[in-house]
Structure formats: structure tokens, C-alpha cells
Image (cartoon, rainbow, N blue to C red; front, side, top):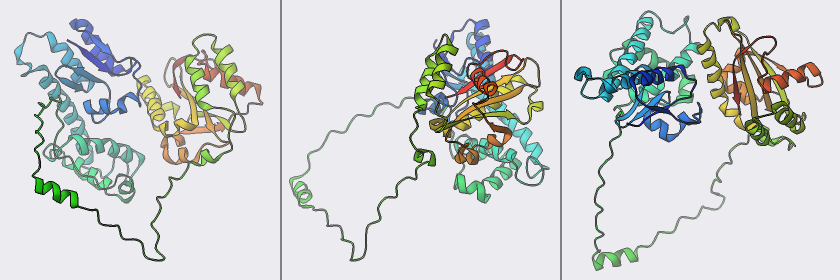
Length: 389
């Protein structure tokens, strides 16, 4: 039996299935080079899980998602007990639905006495929650399912019809059908043989002539298609630094990193066309759980995808004990942090930003250490280092 797990190899939720597979004696293969934010956005992945969440287990019966359900599926592959359902895929699906109902039930209880998640007006928490519910309401959860959670329904429809939500989301409609867990192949239909058309019909078709298009009256002109507005960064003077060349050098340097990659960076760096920025997370005292902190940083990098053409970044999670510190280094096109990034990526306001002064040798060395994941960093061990490239 071929089982393929779509997830990064350091995802704690993937560990559940992988450890269960070892005890069960089942082979589960991880997708090589799985990249969160890229691999899980492909049409092939979204066909397995329309919400785009990981991990997803690809099985001969169809895809299974939700980490506990995946672990149960793997564990029961060799079970002798026939009471686990008509098939393993059915049992896993039931477990996933059960987990979803528990989560919605908890939210429903909270909203029974609260209009919003926090306080008495819309906050960032409501924006995040509504966007998470959006995929469920529009792709997976039909009315007969969500009607068991009336306060969640009231909350969702209230929020998506707020003017600022509606401006971005447009008209939101709830899905009327549930996508199948396993996509059954439709039997190929025999092609209809081309029937010869009667002679009279052929002659009629031959005589058909497209009516001439009315010419615009004097003074009228056909409206030309409007060109797509350019990003202001594309209008800057050309730079000697080719960002893709640096990203390739960074990715391909496996040894002598300081002598090859770091030296190459400064050889390429154009202080007139690019600027370097340090960032420090404002609320490090909240970083008390390692995997939550790592997920927080991973989410930030995903949301920065809009700047991939114009930026390179390193994010360090520092410390062996909580609270963990989050610090970053970013290379941006231009002399300021791009305005569209500040406007569209809400994580930016969670950090203190300061421009690096590369004339200061101490700051320049700090840049070097952050690029190469130097450990210890500022006297502390690294929990993890993530790269945006």
C-alpha cells in the first residue's frame, strides 16, 4: 500500500502519523521538498484539500486530512476489528468531522454571549477568524451542517456583510454540496460519431455571413483596455543587484558559507537600489510555546508572499527556554519598506523596524550572522531559522 504524506518534515502534526506508522509497520513517505505556502497552493494539492491545510495523507482510497484523523487511519490499517466502519476512509472522515464539530461547538458557546471575539467592535481577531471560516462556509460546510451552530452562523454572516469585508470578499455564498473525499474516476463516455449533415443544411451554413460590426459614429472611439498599473518599485532606476542571483547563491552554497555566500552578498549589494532592515517582535513575552511561535513566524512569511519579487528575509527564533525571541533581517528594494507591504501585511505592525547602517561594522557583522544562521546569536542558541526567498 502506497501512502504519501504532504507536509514539511518538521511539522509536529505530521509526526503523529509518522510515529504511528512506525509502530504499525506501515510505510508512509513524505513528499520531498515540500514547501509550505507554495506546495499547498498548487491545484493538485487543493483538489485533495480545498482549504489548503497540511498535513494531508494521500491513500489509495482518497485523501485524508486533519492530523488526528490521519494518525487513526494509519493506526487502523492493520486492525482486525471490523467495527471501525465500512472502510478506513469512512472512519477517518468521521474523526475529522468530529474534530471540526468540537471546534465549532466551542466557538458557538463563546459567541452565544458575545457579538465579537473580543470587546464590542471588530478587531483583528475577528478578521482572522472570519477568513478562516470563509473557506469552510464557501467550500465544505453546507447549511444543514452549520445550522447546528447558530451563533457561528450569525457571527460569520454579520462579519462578511460589513462594508470593509464585503469590499474584499464580494458577495459570499454558502456551498450547497460537499466535495467527495475520494475523487472517483468517471467512466469514459464513448464519443459520438460525427453524423454527416444534410446537403441542404450544409448549403445554408455556407451562406451564413457574419453581419458587419457597426462602426462607431463620428466623435466616438472604442475604449482601449486599461494597462495594469505598475508597482512603484518597478519604476525605480535599475539596480546593479539582481535579487534572483543572490537568492540562487544563497540556496546553492552548501560549504564555506561565509567565504562564498556572505562575500557574494556584499559584492552584489547595491545600497542605492536596496536597503537592509532589522525587525524585533514587540510581544516576545507571549512566545511561551515553541511550536506556536514557529507557526507565528511561518504565517508571517506566507503573508509576505506578495513581496517575493522585491525582498529577501531571514527570521530567527532565539532561545532554548521560553519566552522565545523573534528577530529578523530583511532586504527590500528601494530605500524604505515598500508601502504596499505595510498596507497589506498586518504582521508588519507587530514588529519594531530599524534601518541597518552598514557603515557601522557591528551592524554589518550582525547582518552577516543573521544571513548565515550564526549560533549562538547574541549569546543565545537558535531554536530555528526561516528564510524568505
